[in-house]
Amino acid sequence: MKKILVTGGGFIGAEFVKTYKKKYDIVAPASEEIDFSVYEEVSELFSQNKFDAVLHLAAKHKVLCENTDAADDLIAFKNIQHAAARSGVKKLIAVSDCSDAAPRGCAENYREDDFEKCAPVFGNGLGRYLVNSLASKDNMSTVLRLFGAFGAGALRADNAITEILAPAVAGKKKQITLRGDKTVSVIYSEDVCKIIALFINNDYPRGIYNVASPVAARLSDFAKKAKAYAKKNDRDIIVEIGKDEQKELTADVSKLLGEIGQFKFTALSTAINKTLDYYKTHKSELKEEKQHD
Image (tube, rainbow, N blue to C red; front, side, top):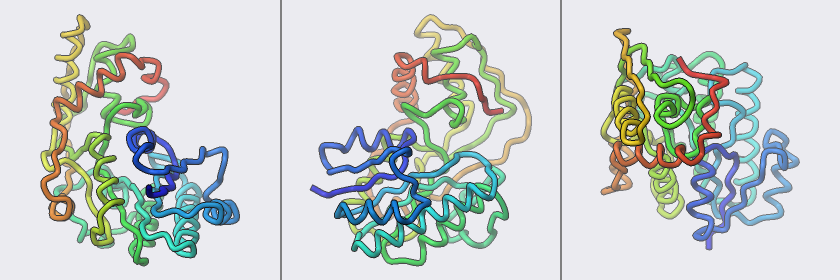
């Protein structure tokens, strides 16, 4: 049984641990147990365990941040990278977002080859860019860049798709308002975890991979399916879609598909229904303190 270090939580990390805890020997320290930006703590963790692979999801933020936070994320990755190399770890898989590629939330059919052509200059995008650049310098790291993920456990305050879906099952707000429609490359969390497992179990070439469904979606697809789900559960919601021009946020995933082959992605309607089924019984997770525009 392979021993895997999982750094960080979030809904992707939680889903991975829940799904693969019987297949792998997983060590997933809580944030209060270790500070990955302190090398002595990281070194001690690696000295106490013989890891076959590291899944790095730890980050202090998911939105634009101060440069100090971006620096902390870079230091944390560098510490893990150094300790992993010294311990003989074969695979370091870093799950990233697309802020290194699309700091303004727009990209059209973005390819991995476009990385480093235009570097972000501040905040989260700069932090991600530097981490991904550092990962490309060794012979064990792979970056899985997500352009948008959704699924059970994604907090409303942190996830734009959850914000769209939430009125279908919870809250006083019974209206979904979009400033405009937008084409996006997204992926269901269960599919992300399956792809991570493939990279753990197979010797794919190291590097950066865009990770998304090969079929792009529109934000209105989520809103309309949420409305239909709500209606089946005797909850009426209104969907309003503005006419603001919205640029695409889409990814070229040919490199990923060329390696993982005939991967069966979850159909969008199925993924949305499974997500809403979860939140129907976990309404307390859909808090409204913070909301996306």
